[in-house]
Length: 495
Ligand code: SAM
Ligand code: SF4
Ligand code: F3S
Image 1 (cartoon, protein in one colour):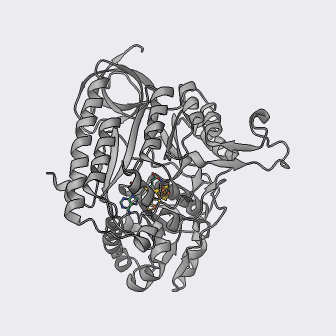
Image 2 (cartoon, protein in one colour):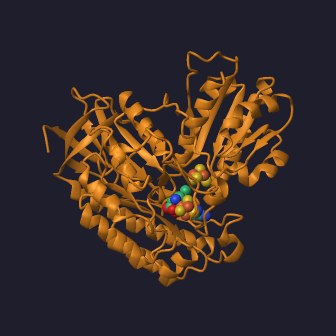
Image 3 (cartoon, helix red, strand yellow):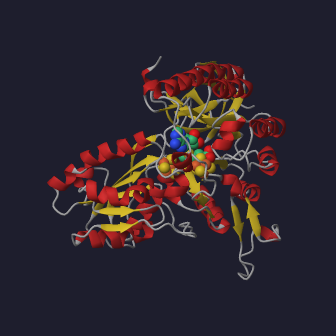
């Protein structure tokens, strides 16, 4: 059994860049616009958690750059050190606390340096953080980033500066996130904020507040701007993208969406996907996360119809047992979930499907755990993020259910889930052997400068010889070899 299993979470990530909450400690740099005068202060930002948090850090960087801050990648050089935090499981919080201790050394080295906590731990722990962690000067929740320059000023006078107010309408719609640390090829676009689903195990609705959909015009503009800058892939982000619903104000004449195609002035997710796909045929469009209760056939038909909407669906199941799903308040049954999988296979047969699983949720019996294994066996996911249940304070599960599956049992169940899934990924990769895929070249292989990697529409990484290929362009790769983690390809002239 691998050591990994003794961690509280395991993301058995096969391929590629993660779009999940296991990313940690990545820094971001952003240059100040030439038109903004420097205030002579530098900020450093480090991000943890899911793609939404990373996308938020880009918004924060933009707000600070416009307020005259300069960016640095060296925290020792910073006047303002920001940590964008995740609260999804306890170990995510512990990771941030350790990092905080380390980063706080900047205060000893640089007089007047400030430390700020952003993101999902802010709301949950505001008082505790300020009292217990005396090192922190600023706490700003996910909806309070516009006030950061003011909070920095306030903290500069020696006061603790806190804004954790959650908003019903903040979407940072018109803020142009900075992308300077990206590969210049793929970018995230947030389309919703918050979550209304209230899954009983989950802190997100508590840390990020009610769900809001961002103005469709601003989303399309952002996609268009990215395309014009040379980007070739956008990922539309939301905790439940399928519930995206933007209602246009009909009084705003001249601002009608796409030739009044959407007569009711309402844009749903399938319509938004199409609008973004129509920005340019060679701009790939991905999205995450889909919710089984809301994923509509319209979305799947849009995927089937548009070559550039990627054939990949992340559809978290959490458990294969209907009683557990009900306790989780997921509002679907095992049968419903399997019906959605059947719909994907029917409408977009070439699609890859990934999922999230929680092992050992409250009162889960051995038989119910077996239902999760049998569901995995039935679907054979290409990719899965697998976790042991971790009770989070304030959630419905913490208040109303008993976390009665012991840690040992949770670990064993998680190990069984991982073991089974590992076999499926190898099987799925073997199915790709001999097939040719269009790939978008995204980077140089970590193993050799002579190899590039790209992803196919199904989100799988394929390594190819570099030859004369250029990053940011498309190529065709025929899969000639694979492990459970990688596909090896040779470049061919067409499909
Ligand atoms: N909105 C997405 C959805 O509904 O599927 C996922 C959001 S959450 C950031 C990502 C994953 O973390 C969840 O799908 C779930 O598997 C896992 N997760 C959330 N809360 C958890 C908890 N208390 N213990 C263990 N895993 C948890
Ligand atoms: Fe959490 Fe459920 Fe919302 Fe996903 S849908 S963010 S798991 S409450
Ligand atoms: Fe994401 Fe973690 Fe918050 S997973 S939404 S950063 S709690």
